[in-house]
Image: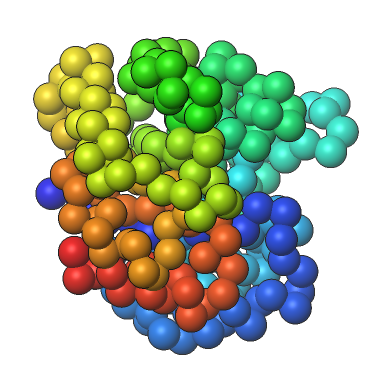
Length: 249
Ligand code: PGA
């Protein structure tokens, strides 16, 4: 059985003034039947980990460098995330791929170092609108998976997030059939590469305009084990709606 996961990505949002949102989430979920992860900006990670301590919530990073340490001004290592209290790190988000030119092999190198450090790697894949309209979605996802997911992956250290780029922050969501098609494809690819046991144990998240009002329908789709949520993770009330929908699914 795969344990479901509601993951929140605060992106470049949040200062100390946002910690009460996390506090209120922590108070609401001293325990939960699903995993709950919040990925705040790195500047808040340590304090967020303290706020979430002894609750159902864990915290994670939004990126890490592919090297263990060294002369990389402005970057953050997997060990630093771990030291600040992170249990996981988002890697290869389309905004990183777009803003920083990250390629599949960069994502793979980062995932290796994150896994070696003991972090779960949430590896993001997803097609652009142009690629979907050209009926290239599965080819693109397949290529991103082979390029970005390292060989050492297991059901414990790998989570894959399917995030169609055109659905992120736009309010647009693929149909449930479209989500199901991609998630079934990702599952089949993982089983083929890693064997049935590992392939079936990796959690698959859907991400892109998930909110309380559509979460229940999305969570009923086969091979959707949770969500990676941007905008609706910023307010505890919205994110609680997503967590509750996941707990009911
Ligand atoms: P969104 O972002 O929920 O605001 O669409 C999702 C993501 O980028 O992870």
